[in-house]
Length: 182
Ligand code: FES
Ligand code: FES
Image 1: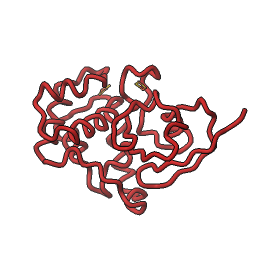
Image 2 (image 1 turned 60 degrees about the horizontal axis):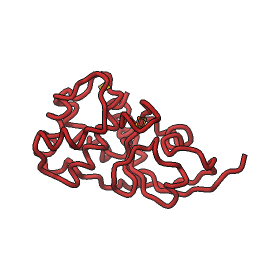
Image 3 (image 1 turned 120 degrees about the vertical axis):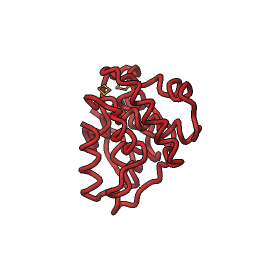
């Protein structure tokens, strides 16, 4: 089967791969690059578990072909912590128990970061509206919304700075990312 070369930046690191034209971005991230913090809940654009940032905007990566991400900047949950320091959204989800099984959590955090980038001081209704594309099968919405509102209070909930490769590769950040994204 013929393949297509793609080159993209993921969490600050350049990645190159040969992919089938039909390969979805979520499978490139998970299966080729080993970034399994991005989850697959439905594969049909319904659940939001696969949400990542593509050129700074939240997208459902099961709805984007890997070839469409050629030349783009991608941010996944693994790139949200700053070294050993959790992202304010991760900290807030931790503190507010904004997760139960955790399956939806990476997508929730990536969608919430996008929301807070665009609206740093949202109302509860705006958070609920902003996360309507993300489903929690444990139905833990109350604490998820509380966590996003608490992250907003830090004034840094929408921060999604691209880490340096040395930060991105830090073992401590990987450990934390895995701990908060089962
Ligand atoms: Fe992409 Fe559900 S796996 S929206
Ligand atoms: Fe289980 Fe949301 S915490 S799916």
